[in-house]
Image (cartoon, rainbow, N blue to C red):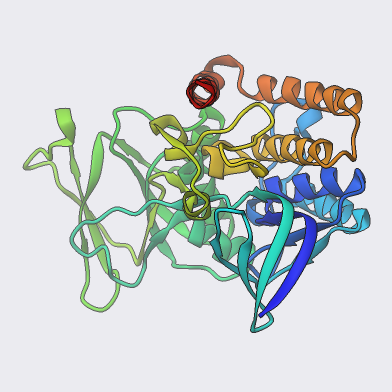
Length: 371
């Protein structure tokens, strides 16, 4: 087993991890980025739609273009990127167990940033294990990365931004989305995305869920049912659709396994997808030298992930003495201001409140540790 030494090891080459790598490497750190995928960039390279919001967050630019620019900056920064590489464990001292090119390594870093992202939630119902039932993110990967259509007639469950955006992209790829189903009484995503779906003629069934998927060896149809208070099915309201694919967009869950292994403290925040690690304003966890960034800290969106990555990279570089306190403070103030903008307004209120809870829990934890 080989041992690798580096200043900063980053787990995850998505929007958060690459942003952290750029900040740390340009400050002068020796940076190693590790990702299990064959291509870097994470979710950005699946996002063919244009971002919207402010100019500073590249409104009007398609996600994959943002990813290309970020990846180019990281390559020029001198950071090393290991792809097709598995991080299978983390010790209490933050050393990483890694398999790279078929060989086992121990990566010992002065600072570690975990930017592992999030995974799709699943939902069990009769027929949910049939071929043709898949996560919306998997379908998005198939059409936007691998250029493979997952099916011809598709039903989407879930009307958050993921469900709405992927439904539209499936139609752009040539599939027919026969219906979008949402258990809640109202659509969960942005109106601009829902408007595209409606204008394309896709019916949206709120207060409905999947009762069962039909088929023997593959999906042949789906039956939905209306739900009342407590999401209890209402008999006699069933509707059947002839489909060959069912996509599930029923939320994301932070991929926190490595952070649990390191012994970090957690809190439970439903708005962020479940259990999330405590961290301070520098994105440092309760384990000294271990930072987090992006969806692993709580599910938001790509712009927030990039800014948290920027923050973690700057903080790690400052801790290594590569940035003066004054230089770091200026950079962190700019990044924090942009993050606050992303979490402002009606749609950002829940995320802002959840982030405040997370930071306050960290302050309480450190106060108790100091007693």
